[in-house]
Length: 85
Image 1 (cartoon, rainbow, N blue to C red):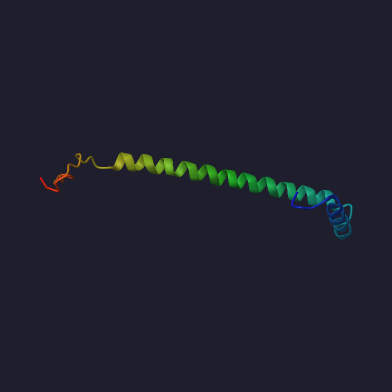
Image 2: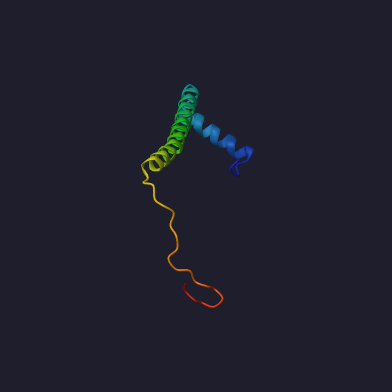
């Protein structure tokens, strides 16, 4: 886990307890959990919106396109002789 061993994690936990106090740690954990939850839901909403927009754009483009006849080549080049017909 991020290259941290057990000893390093214990030291970090002791420093957090000294800085914030034992009573504030549950509140910090709750706030951190809510922040992560909000972040994930925001990312999910943005991802869903980005998937819906191209579909709508493609549908609109197809319905608004003018109908063109098939394009036919004007000149044909013979690859062996290089003649244009």
